[in-house]
Length: 173
Image (cartoon, rainbow, N blue to C red):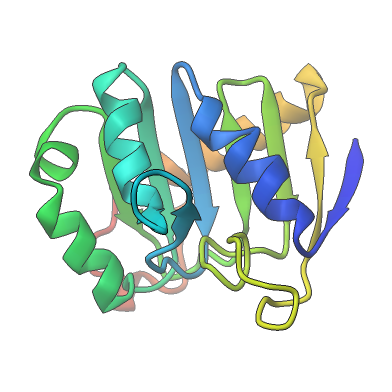
């Protein structure tokens, strides 16, 4: 287990993690915004464009989020028809989600304070990003625990007894 802070999030989670995924990416985040990744022909590309490329290679992506995604995120998603209409990209809203978890290929996992936003996990400058900290692990036992936690929420294990069910727009069960 390794502690990461601030700008280390982008390299450890996005560059060395998500962008190198071979089979799946699971993300839990309270907030979802149109995170951009530097590089390519343009100055930067939305992370969703990279997700679409990964999806074409067979990578399955799940995003479990606690609030409605930002308008720019939704606009980018609507432009990427192949991503949101194809197989392997799913988003699920759960109003109780405040966890921040990223699991890549059962080989790397992150948990900490950073949301899936430019200021949280993104490549913003040190003067514009949030102060964030978390841990990265490659330990199979720790990764399995985070996978079981994520999957339990994703599969609706807590929906039947949830105290927020009345405000949930899409309970799983």
